[in-house]
Amino acid sequence: MKKLLAIVLIVFLAVPVMALAKAKPAQEEEPPAVKEAQPEPVDTTADEIDQWIINVRKGLEKYRGPIVFKGPLGQTPQWDTEIVLTNAEVERIRQGNYTAAISWHGSQGEYTEALGGGIKDGLKHLGIKLVAETSAEFDPAKQKTDVESMMALKPDIIITLPTDSVTSVATFRPVVDAGIKLVLISNQPDGYLHGKDFVGITTSMPYDQGRFMADAVAMGTKTKKVGIIFFDADFWIVNFIDDVVRDTLADEYPEIEVVVEEGFANPAVDIGNAANAIIQRHPEVDTFYVSFGALPAAIAAVDANRPDIMVVSQGLDKPYMQNMLSGGNIYAIITDSTYNIGVNAALLGGYGVLGKRAPEYSISPSAIITRKNLKEMWKLAFRVVPFPPEFEELMK
Image (cartoon, rainbow, N blue to C red; front, side):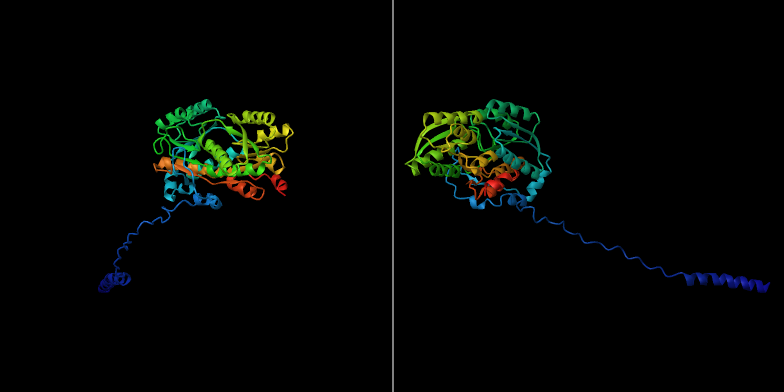
């Protein structure tokens, strides 16, 4: 019995000793380290000019010179390099889910394609959806109907090249009254105020265009007898260019006589008719200045078997250049930086939805087209319109 008791006692005493031997002293857990608050990363590029805008204007620098004219209401024009948006502003526009519509005065082949391409690329860059695009074909009544139709889509922005400055007053008044941001290309409705009725105007360098064309007329004529076929509508920038041509010929080329002037309203029909009339009534005229739309005048010269008649105009496009490069009647063509004017219009739309005050009257460079610079100027002016491969052979 004593032996059994002793064994039990030994076991009883051994258990706690073994437990103590196995148990390790508990280690005190350290509290988790408190992370120091880190400042939010600062976007150091937010206030920088959007790089796409800078890149899209490369190559035009050498064509920018002094500005020596005033806008239709006495505005001081600025180069389009003043139209800029920061990275932060572009991002704000993209977050807005804005929409836009385009109302053209008329379609002019590759020229309209390039101008529209600039608008569309600019809108796409800003994340603005294009919901409508119409062409009035130089008919003010149609433009009014077009605008009424697109307003039903409730766009935030309407970009337009008005058919004229008189009828467009009533055409675009509902746009302004509805709070839609109105961006103008080249033409301004009478009485419309910058910052109140429209965001801004983007256009070409009309003074240079007029001088270049007057110089080309002087180089082209041999008889020193010329005819002017002018756009007979209230369209300020074209009217201004026409006047610069007249004034430059009178002031710098007094030996040249402007024998006759004929106006046109519908380029597709009236220019050819005007050229035919001049050829029949004034055979001594050997050079035409045409405000724009040169091809019908060149065709009239061919039909009259007058290869000696030279045609000077503006508006780069494929048929004009084909005629000129092939030794046809088109003697010289002047171009503006068409694509960039479109981009500027889209950027002005961005100004509008941001509520940012835009430059009132912005211009893009113009240049005269020659065989040497045709490829360069096509790329600068048209961008989205491929250079015609058949021109390569004609330029040799």
